[in-house]
Amino acid sequence: MAQARGRTARRTHTFTESVIREMTRVARKYDAVNLAQGFPDFPAPMLLKEAAAKAIYDDINQYAITWGTPRLRQALARKYLDLYDMEVDPEREITITCGATEAMASIMLALVDPGDEVIVFEPFYENYGPDTVLSEASPVFITLEPPSYRIDPSQLEAAIGPRTKALVLNTPNNPTGRVFDREELQAVVDLCLKHDILAITDEIYEHIYYKGEHLPLATWEGMADRTITVSGLSKTFSVTGWRVGTIIAPPEITDAIRKVHDFLTVGAPAPLQEACAVGIEELGSSYYESLALEYSSRGNTLLSALQEAGFNCSAPEGAYYILADFSQISGEDDTTFAKHLARYAGVASVPGSSFFSEPDRGRSLVRFAFCKRTQTLQDAGDRLRAYAGTRT
Ligand code: GLN
Image 1 (cartoon, protein in one colour):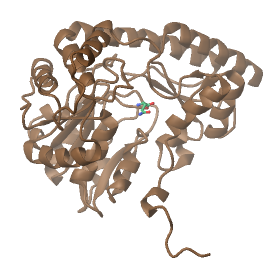
Image 2 (tube, protein in one colour; image 1 turned 30 degrees about the vertical axis):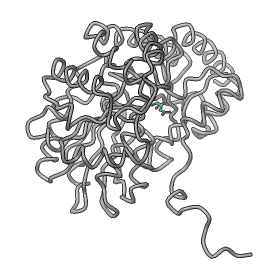
Image 3 (cartoon, protein in one colour; image 1 turned 180 degrees about the vertical axis):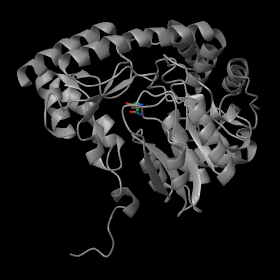
């Protein structure tokens, strides 16, 4: 019998399931080393684990305040002041969410109207497109060209039109490894101010960079009241499963975001927010520096292994991914290559096309994550070299 209406909403037909998460399932199926989804395979700091257990035993097990437990908001406000000289009101400008993923979705739903345009730089982290579509806005993509992946101000200005509401900037960047420099950020700032555009900045890798510096866009002159800063504790404290994300935004914008967040999730896990507060209070700059140092060494291990196996790639400036060109190893498309690599080499990666609006742009690319123990990366390197040897 013909159905008058489809059973599923049209908006769900316009994007696909997450390829990153799918590749984790592929890795499990073939027992491959999972360098696809970016989550650590080493333990979180003991201090955090103990604080989480203590919070549970102390009966912090009911809903936290919807927009975040006071201790975590206060700890964050102090951190932003100490590290970035950024004044943030913990009462009116901070919202704690279920990961940066919920943060991005709540922000889009709170700020963007149907028909609005949102500028997204590509290659992009795959959530930004669907987040835009769920709020019935249109993503406008700007392609950053390899190998430099620099932001070109004239290309950005050309993409801005009367319906442009916001742009999404992710730095340090997943998947390119770029840490956008002062000149690029200044160009973004100038255009946001000139054209009255909101900046949604995903700074989840704020402490993981090997070159340059992390300069939150909200600290640039004129940007505090038009920047929505997203971050979280998943990457900083190696607790991706805890789902604790953070949003900093001016009060009026925060009010709208908090309403959406409340009806989506009520709040992030109460005991884990408490533990993250302890982490921020106790682990300061020296922890962040050693985190970056350790990742730098892991990145070097993976980079040499990839280059020795015949991939064309360069050292990332930040975050914990390497986007690698495999055209010297195989002429297959990225999805076929990534699936073969998981099955026959025993190493899972993410097909490059999932980071682009036009799949062809990522046809000869795959992304590897190096948030893994050195031993895991060496094992993956051995497998990749052995596999490439059979193909070239
Ligand atoms: N940010 C991580 C990645 O790009 C994982 C994100 C996720 O699966 N939620 O792999």
